[in-house]
Image (cartoon, rainbow, N blue to C red):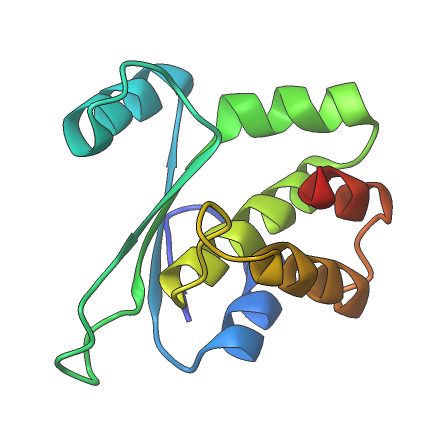
Length: 134
């Protein structure tokens, strides 16, 4: 289940498919994202999505938190010609995989391949596959 003030039923299927655990989902603007990125990662710039896994010492705890920049998601969706929901779905999949331990900066393409499988499974635009493999 997703915890969010926003209406994001379209992400529930993805969340429950990947993990039975709850996920905190937070939507922010570019300014807020830049502040979070600076505070948490010492990077003074905005980004599209961040994920913060929780240590799984207690099964009742959520898997972690996902922060999505709505401004960047809207502009990227418009730029690439797909819907805002599709863009948010891609960002959510990417962040969920990070919460589950995947790391595209260290693996040999496993995370990108899993993203591709999930994009196909959830019938998202094929153009999103090319983007994740880039």
